[in-house]
Amino acid sequence: MEAFHNALVRYGYKGERAKTWIQAFTQLADLLERKNRNRTRRLTVFLDELPCFDTPRSGFLPALDLFWNSRASWMDNIYFVVCGSATSWMMRNIVNNKAGLHKRTTHTMHLRPFTLGQTEEYLKSRKFRWPRIAVLQAYMVLGGVPYYLSLLDPKLNVPDNIDALFFSAEPELENEYQRLFNSLFKNAEGYMEIIRLLSSHRDGYTRAEIARELKIADNGHLCEMMDDLEHCDFVRRYNNGTLQKNGIYQLIDFFSLFHYKFGTNRVTDEHFWRNALGTPEQNNWYGLIFERVCLWHERQIVRGLRLDAIRHDYYAWRSQNSKPAVQIDLVIDRADGMATICEMKYSKDDYTLTEGEYKKIVHRMETFQKETGYKGGVQASIVTTFSLQNNMYSEISPIPITMNELFVD
Image (cartoon, rainbow, N blue to C red):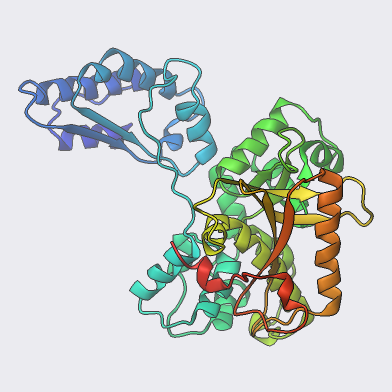
């Protein structure tokens, strides 16, 4: 309240400090009306980290509601901008407000994590000279969060940077996971339990499966929690084909995936990541996370396949009958009567498709067509880091996609 008063004073207010939020917003409205007498210029009010104002029993939201509806909205040259990093609070209390602020927002801007292309551009601006495979490897650990990317040292390579941030004697991001969730959510433990569960199952879970695994009720509260995690870009909800019910939730936050795979272990080796280079554990992890990177860049894949000019839908698909269950992470359903299934393959060199992988892809295509009753043709596309080695099995992917397409914005 004192800081709010000091801000008012800085812009010309001369009264006493308010004791309640209603008084504070009344003072702000009085100040704006005085400045707005001639209506010669735009007046902008900006409140940062809005969720932090809404402390228990503060009466902040009703006061904000009263300020906007009774005073500010009547001044047509007022631009009122609010911001908050707790995305779930912003969605529930501002964007989807059911009381006095219902449908009052005229524009929302969701600040999502950087894409690969934006990450490369940012790192170049900070004098990094990394090849794209290095940018990709850093992205698979830190995601596109600018704060985490700002901690990287251009003098170090990727493994040494990861060791410095997570495994050194005093790692910069040692307790970041707990700090992150406690800053975003009230009662953060429940959210972290959901993330922990999703981190253990690459294909994801339905809401009913999450409730069963965690032994909690499948009710409106769990629905709200899943919506919060989706709005905050921790999980993606995909439909099994075109069905809208029984959505499957999959963890796509790279930092959380890394935390639960490596950050929860008590590693004493200060050069753990560098010393793990080439090991099956690290290679398998890169392979899994590359799939998630591709899913975060679905639009780039569609453009790389030159399908952006055709009406299309894309979704994931999970078999209901086959054992073991067939999972296809990305199906592009095209208006020309064709479907493209994408197979993601991480490799530090050109990828060679083996006979075994070829047969698995054919099996997935046949299972998809049989169970869905898809009437059109089905083709495959390999998404890999560099290029697809030409051999007797590569013909199954007529247009392979490389990571260069993923970097296009």
